[in-house]
Length: 463
Image 1 (spheres, rainbow, N blue to C red):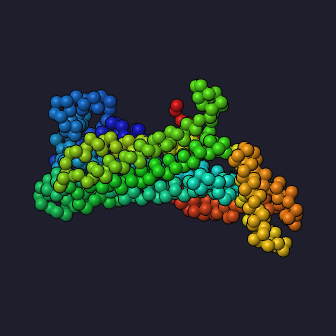
Image 2 (tube, rainbow, N blue to C red):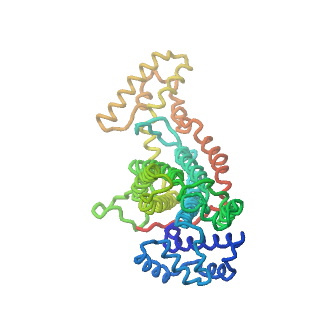
Image 3 (cartoon, one colour):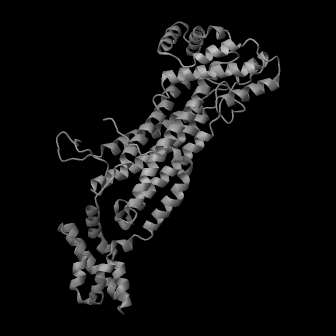
């Protein structure tokens, strides 16, 4: 991602745009553009470090980045020096290049996002049957399974996949529109031939690999396009933050942890610590990512008529920053999902501490089937439940509700059934079936177009 937004890629893309503009103009009959000019432009389409330095030096003189690069490109391709940028305005290269970067950056994110979903889906299937205490309001709730909980993260990631792909496919090229979007300069080049100007616009769009160009623009493409692209990235940030927060809470509960290297140090003072630093990194960067969306909204809303220049500086910061941030968030999630550690005994111990309360309804139903009064049974088990809760909360003891039930002769008709009534797997509903179907049907269908993106490569993170 950093390579995509590097100066070399940016300026080489400008040259690619100038080359294809010249090819299209020559193809449509401009005799001033020779085969030699095209060949020299093609031969030097990738800018060198020396040329980048030369353009920077020229910019200090003329105070114009595009014209500085026109000058340096002309030195490298002297046969084309007089026709580079013919009929174009600066936004022909700057805006069209930005649209190319938006498209290609989405492709890079999609590759990593697909692999995060794939690895998390494998985790969900592996643990689809493992009961775990559910939480609502971060208070103990009915049981779910480890795998089913993972599907909640996956589902939001699938929506992010859909949104980023949709935004990517909606990106067109600005094309050749001239200084205020009227194509007046190109109409003059082709002696008033409107059909040739339209052909030129379409040909450049095709040469640059786009399915369509925007039919109307000002000097720039509408900055609402940036909103459409960064909106899904901001939404991805929310997904990542939620998932990483859940994992941080689970780490505190000692139920699930992110990967922890054998030589990793959690704290300089507390040697025993296993801080969830990867998830903390995701949360930190995700907050930055979600906030960048506001840059695009505010910028689009204050553009004047055909254009103003107060969009330029902020876009040079916010757009690369959004993609670079999303990229490292996904890289970190890929690392995390490749090595999640589950602690079944801790999970079981927590279930055991809460399950007796949840099983009270099952006990009541079993007693009714033995001929007992529901109301009488409800009152007796209510009293025992409060006694057990007092032991847990006031004395710091274990939940002894079942022991109390076993000691109360009233409940003797169901004593032999208590183990069955307390089987955690009977409290998870359809969680295993939901997980299995979701991964094998919903996720499989969503990832089918991206099979070539999948990789088993391990992602290493820098400190």
